[in-house]
Image (tube, rainbow, N blue to C red; front, side):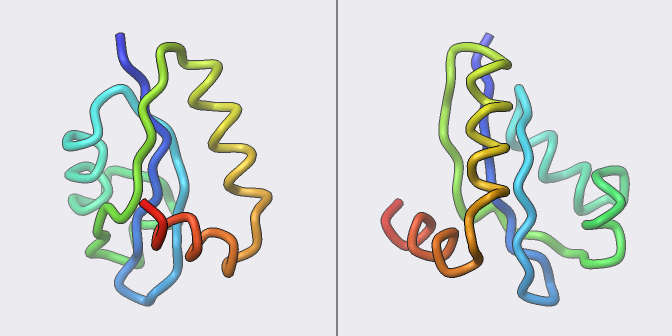
Length: 81
């Protein structure tokens, strides 16, 4: 099963990072208000970045790494994708 680490841009311009096994379903959940608490009040969200991994642990580790980045570093990551 493939796992993904992703970044969405919220309607207020903030960025949210997470991981999932189904990108389309997860983005739809965020936009339906069934995603993370953070994104519920910042809808709609737009997928702006994703990486694919072989394992959940790899995806979760990358998620943690991205969450530790500054906003500028995240924007550079997105721009380089």
